[in-house]
Length: 405
Image 1 (tube, rainbow, N blue to C red):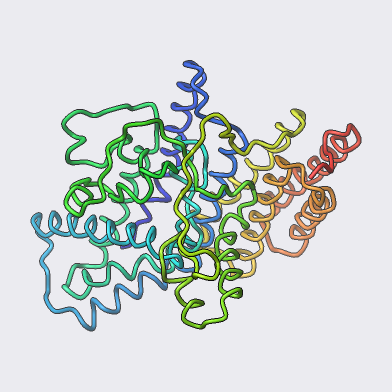
Image 2 (image 1 turned 180 degrees about the horizontal axis):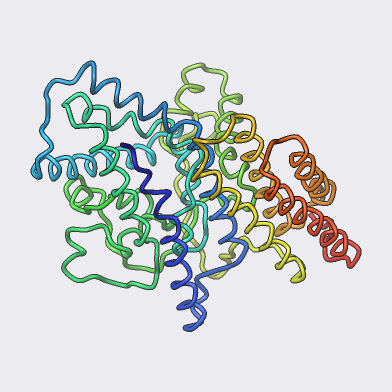
């Protein structure tokens, strides 16, 4: 039986985020910003929702090779579990390393690196499209004959392990730094400092980076994010912006070979007529500034409530989607995505926000009438939408919603 360990761990994730957040406020560390954290968690919600529509297909790919082309019948002994654990981590290293060295793969993986903060919400900032190709790197394990359920279990735990290393609260772990991937090692991986770029690709074991020459110890202060900042809280644009850059570069290249290389070469590669390879710039701490557009403080409560609605609805779908009709699932997921876009737009004060938000709220009311939700859900959701309409209207009249950008 398949068990979604990631989904089951979501409550634990939020408990740990709450603990780190409380520690952050108590120590006045400044590790969290509301806008950045909302953006990170929005990516996580979106990744889980889009993942619903491809989980079965991707698992089927591994399962098909195992059932039809496997070379051996691996037993389910403790030693096989240990060997598979090491093998999953090994192939994760290479998937992760290639995701930093091939533009087409980096276009998906870049989402995880966009945050300019480093806290546990960053662990949940995941690409919506990375899962479409990451499974291919593990197919040799199916060919060898490792059971699909065993693989899925250990792959999930490899992902779960990486949650806790997205923190600045833990500085060093002594001797374990030589064996395990730790917060210190992973902070380096998220750095945009030139010396830190493309280092420490490990999942659980740092030994692969040490062996294959991609290890870098944490030394100077880490500046988080990507070399060309995203400068947006829009979760859809976060998943598409690098593709947009690649397509624009390809269109400017008359040679077909250069068009192809744009997608296959490492990040920073450009054809000679566009200047050739561009190295990551050094960071000038004197002028360095994080993306942090201003917004009215009165919007904070409204944004948090709308985000909580998206989170609650997303959790409901995540744990009950197998019992939902396709139209209900698609409509609910789409409305959640629109809500996440709205939260980002509110925190950026986008000029198209007012019309978009009223349209989203009205759409929510229409969905209540069209979809066959239980009467209890209909009453609760309709009430929430009506309150939101009134609340947003009052914010607009109080000039808390501006059209600055």
